[in-house]
Length: 486
Ligand code: AMP
Ligand code: MG
Image (cartoon, rainbow, N blue to C red; front, side, top):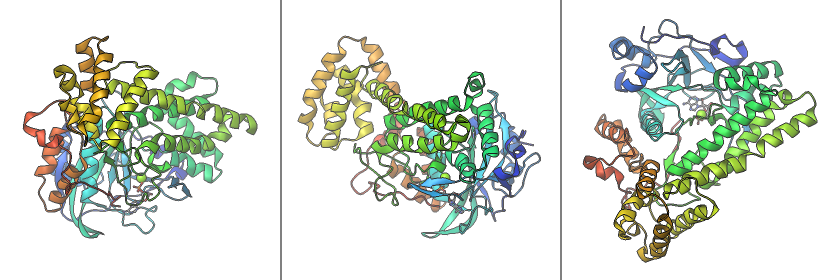
């Protein structure tokens, strides 16, 4: 058996899920198997990297010890509440305990219909499978808490999306797939008993230290708020736009989940959205912090019956917890952005220096990743052009650069450079490169997939043979819109 399953979610009451088996696909082919991750998970890689392993990862064979199920959840989608969502195209095979004694879900995505599929086919096109594999693994390499990708399989079946497209199955790994929407499922049904079962399960699985607190559910709320504030600030540091921050796409573990219409900034534009369905810019780049706060407010609402027996006191607890979010987020954001300009533990004046750079970048239509990535070089050489060449009016940034350099005089030069180099990636999964990967993959050529994946294993390191992956898109390569692809 490749997986030594140790399942806990399937022991929870029936209201939490629906037992469902994956449906087989016609002609599965392995595109990529994540050996490093398999090792972290304590998986027998020789057994997984085999014809038997492929049948499991394609959903054609349910291995011993698996108790396949589709999880129940609700969610606010673009602000409107949908009481009935759930895993419509994903099936949890079971859980394994990794080397670090952490429990992980092993989930197939695109493995056929479940009772939650409604009108959907339960399948995934190959494009979104390749995108999620590349981007989630890149996020992990960039140091961001995220779900991981264990395998990408081409199914051999076509799915109807924008016309017919080849299908795929992704094996997703997460420290759990419990979302704010999972809590909303029980809150919407006023099922307070199971709400408590869920909260206790989450405390045991993700926040065991909360057990020692006087009000455990308040502590749980505080912890989730704290992790999300950090997570979103981390996205911002990298120019990442999630694109569909519905409450069903926000985990309570603090991992990034669901890489549907996600994208990375090219030119810096704080109000940028890519997703074709985000017409109002609800999930725009700079709105991600406020939206996380909004989502966490929905989470706090679900916990009201647990926070205190007195409803007034419950509301006061929830408000006190939620009121912490803006400053937690702002502090995390400032720390990350002052680090990007080489200042550890920056103060308010350092933050305004970072903000001034961002507004110059916005005006100058400068590439977010390129500018920060070349700051160390311009500091070392004293040459403005290393950075100024990315601005449409290079002279507009000269004053900022000179002020910045003189401000950095007070610090140790090698520490400043090292801080910037570990904060500003050389490589990100650029939108146009992802498109290139998907286009080639749909035609059966996975070379671009493998190349991009390889580069992104070490995103903070210069890689001379891959410099083209640093480049911003040419005007005709620019990706303007992304799609969920569901
Ligand atoms: P997502 O856009 O991935 O966050 O999904 C939102 C909801 O739609 C979830 O309940 C999914 O399970 C469901 N869904 C998405 N795609 C499909 C599909 N192809 N078939 C069935 N359900 C789907
Ligand atoms: Mg989702």
